[in-house]
Length: 214
View 1: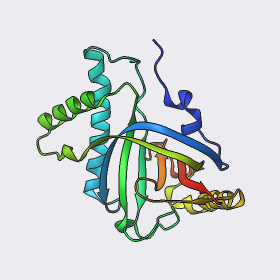
View 2 (view 1 turned 60 degrees about the horizontal axis):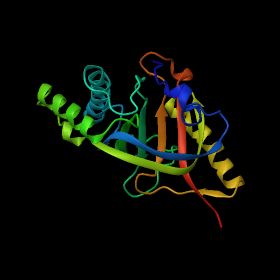
View 3 (view 1 turned 135 degrees about the vertical axis):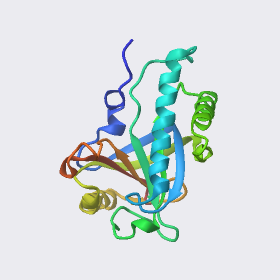
View 4 (view 1 turned 45 degrees about the horizontal axis):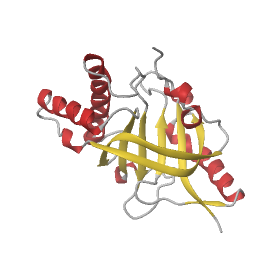
């Protein structure tokens, strides 16, 4: 049985060009954890990312030892993603000196055959093995972004503003405007491990929700 590789199966979502392009992002299932603070310093952020990976790999490995859900195929765990915003204003990816003020939702997509029941079993197992962990922060949720503009940013996270300027220019030129509210925020998908990849070679999908200007 072939393993589901998100980079090959969903190239439009995870392998965009370095120039902006439009995309209609469908409804997908995620494990999400919400928090606040500087991702480089926050213990809460570090714990959230660790919990997301623990749950995602627990679900993947657990399915190999039990009855398979309808539509099951082995798969590569999807990449870490983040939604970012400030309390009182939109964060468009250009402000880098206020990291302590970030609100964020970190999340990892799950294959469509993963049910809430499967998630709940993995969550219970994680809580039993790590009673000190506040695993109840994790949510299993479907999320549909709809019409967006996206592109691949290659380089350090702090170098994103120049890339986002090109994204914004594309939005304005083509008769759209960015619209961020609720879960529709500045969205980053992390395709590289910053512990292993030099900053100048990091690959990050940047995605913004948009609406057509009437």
